[in-house]
Length: 104
Image (cartoon, rainbow, N blue to C red):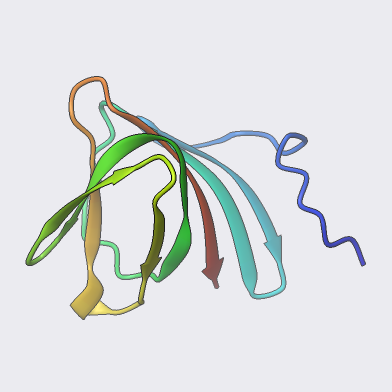
């Protein structure tokens, strides 16, 4: 069993305008290195759960009831479900690089 995820060796996958990711899927666990840049707009609320860390840059995490600025070094833990629906919002010139761990 190889426990190391070689993010450097994984190709970037374009997800949408302003969004790309490197993805490693092992069983029911997904590791993603995700980059979002100015111009990325989430079309809908995300109800998936995420845990991870902001490696570089910054963005705003918008929920239905609040907003919070995420910056390099911040660790996130978002539970799945409609009550925790969220969106990443990037302002002019913003860029954020996130390392995310997700159950699929």
